[in-house]
Length: 478
Ligand code: PLP
Image (cartoon, rainbow, N blue to C red; front, top):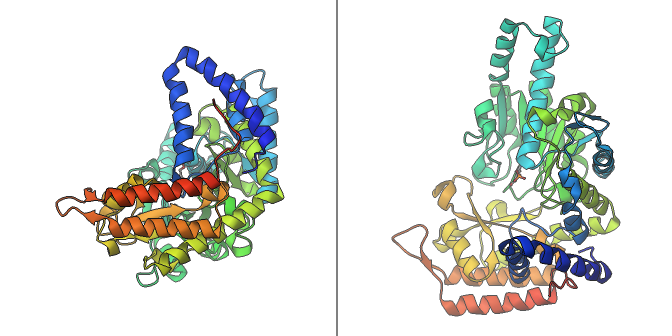
């Protein structure tokens, strides 16, 4: 963590006072805030999408920038008095552009889903709406005649998107039916090779040639490998698609220069989206980076699909992005990837089957079917032993998306606490110990039994590891 003890001591006083004030209004909330810190300090957090933001980032979120409405863009707002929101939004956008070497950055999205919605509608606006307006000889959509508008609405609803399948590691927002993206687009997905479980670029190309998508989506939540975005762009160009990359999970590895060249999405994608709270270690939120031709459309995210910008969160994004521009963040990102590799080796040495046979990013996917367990049973047993993970489908999963056959684990959070190669090897040992000791209950895909002795011993070992790498060490809430 970047927080030194001076910062943490000052933060201790700030938080103690803040909690006293909150407690005077709703003690239940103050108690939950204290309990959450205790829980996070006491568990091995291996959820690949979670992290620990710095105290500077956390403190920035609790300010009166929250109270300001600022619809619009920097210097062009629908409300008066937005100069301070302008300042923080400009800082965040400038840091994002410098960090990712992006021509344009839009930092308003409230979350990753929102960033993807902004991107989709910006692509539709640029590729479908703008030509329709030009053809009708009008500048604004309000000026279209009723018939032309109806035609445009139909055209907007008749576009195609191609993204990675859910069980190969794609995300729900990449055109799947339960999400609005799947209701907006006709969707097709590409999977991974049945043998290697790796992305097969030739298969992606063949599907793209046949399906002719408007948007080719790359990016994932649970694919443990890097992707060659130069190749994906080649495929997009060949079929006339816009390449959109969702780097929500691995933005920290891009920022930290672990993924460079063909594996850095930003120079290759027309539009890149991300969250700011996962491997990037910022506040919860989203962001869109894009090539200049998409900038105007992206900047219309609010009010196109977003509500008023969250000034306090945008300010915290600026702080987190400033942190990510420090050399220490590159060291952190490299450790995240090195730890994932050591973790994978430690698990495999102990007989675990990993989807794709390993990792080259921050996450791993364990196939728990080799232990006769569902993902649901494994997730619960690990939690009983104080290890927080999440179940996840594996390719061609016989147990579907609810029970699953996989456990997804990641290294960003514990690397922030200072865990290194040895500690991850010990965590691998704990995980294998729990999985081997868990017995499925034949009557249900959710029920299982784990001997109490194993859970207790695992919790004791993890408590030692956690004590050696405390979270916000000098932060004392009293
Ligand atoms: N995109 C990807 C690849 C994700 O993994 C996630 C979250 O898990 C999202 C988007 C959505 O992010 P949020 O939860 O901030 O909306």
